[in-house]
Image (cartoon, rainbow over all chains, first blue to last red):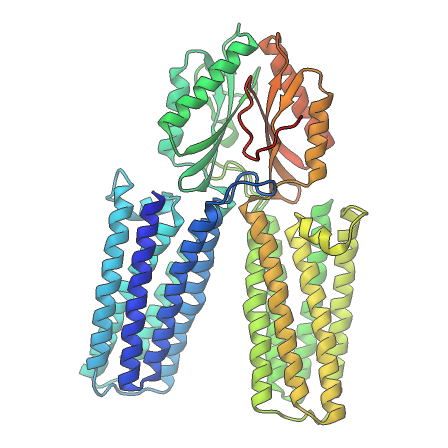
Length: 319
Length: 313
């Protein structure tokens, strides 16, 4: 699974390196400073991919005294940093370029190089997007609804790549349209407007990405399917009388902390109870392998419950 | 208490930056200097940083919900990190840009009166803010140890963000004052530009330090060793507890710690006795370490190999 997100990231890095090369070649032959700036922009995008790889590799460090729950969240942290870079250097830069070209409009004489670069970029980004989508859909039961899968996803480095690539492909289409309309109507205003639209798109996308990685950094619970799986295990144990809503937190896409509070049926010896708990931990981790740490606290007299009904989770805290 | 403390520090910083922004805009109005106008905008951004920290504190008080069952405490750390990025980009980057610009097109300062007035007022305001922030911070930190190591160990990201920002501001203003003075005395406009670049470098360093501190807290930092020792002492004193794993702790906010611990109880306890023991342990821990807001104790007859590779004797 970690391999999955790495493939998506490698795809994005390669695409951006190739696009940067196309842009620099075009800048060399046309002497266009805008194309040079575009090339630098693609180098920054390549850097984003490297930052995500850095996050993935740093997240694999072992837990230590200062970070007893490990470094899993490094991935979420670096995804957030990438979102800021897309916001400032992607969105801000495109809007700046757009305003600049509206103030000093220049007619495109020969759009051949523009079309070549944009076509190549479309090809590379499109391939990278297909690779990452393919990997992402494989890891989801219901590949139909990509947006809600992304919102629920805990694999921020993969969805960062998907979001970045989708925005890039959309942006390239807008850019092609802008160049085409500028040349067709002999009016450079379309080119500038296209740049501003691309900038606005990147700002929106970066905000969405920042929001998603922020939630994960603060500590997001496991998906409802995982929670249902846990409750299913709890229900199947006859010796468990009651339990509170399972508290979970993702430390990375593949590592969840689970804290359970359960009440056993009466008449247990401590040793028996401990054995049962051991069995319960094993069962949960077997059925939900992403749960890497389970803590079960035994509680007594859960009068706090409003329902009072047996064998029902005590969700009263949240409702 | 400390929450109120960090609020005082933040309000002090906001007030100082607002007053400095006004001084700079006034100077810009009377001198027509565009650099002074840009400086005023910069102070407005600093004011915005204070507001972001307040936003973080407010949002961190949201109740836990299904999606975030451990609460929103880390909002403070998140917004401190955002502030560090803003200081880096808009503070450091902007000052270096201004410095390079001044080196490329050096202009001799003819009448430095306004510069001295603004810089003097700014040192006064930032100094007051720094004094307020330090006073609240000193009250809450342990008496021993120096200030820097206290900041490194502190979990109160909003307060140390303000202290770091204010310290950098006072140092930066002193550098600016020296720059203007030497430029004037030696009739060398390059010194002014160089001062700007030094200030920029200072802000970049400070922002990196702040980012690193808030990053650690965001990823999940453990509690202070004293807190952990106190928990172990409580375990030691309870006759029903035989062995325990190293307590796993994580700060969700300056005053909110999650603790999970595995214990091995002595044999021959009834289940209900065990439950009572754990309940009283929980109460005692929360009472002696009120910052530990969530305690989960798991009993086991075989302590699993501790992730940290060290078991208590």
